Amino acid sequence: MKTLSISKREIATITPQEVEVLATRLEQDNYSNAFEGLNDWHLLRAIAFSRPELVESYIHLLDLEPYDEA
Image (cartoon, rainbow, N blue to C red; front, side, top):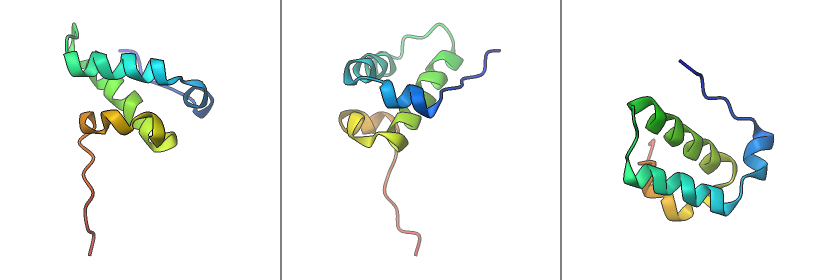
């Protein structure tokens, strides 16, 4: 099995169009196996933490809910 590895440099150069393609794949959920979808999900999540402005329209795909730790 191939391990997903993406560097901060790669995330820094990703374009809004590439994020849109990634999000479209996730929304369609038409993967040949579960690991491909999981890899895309992890990639979108990494982008969300480093460049949140790129994933604002797709945050629903990550199930990131604000919560109160108090």
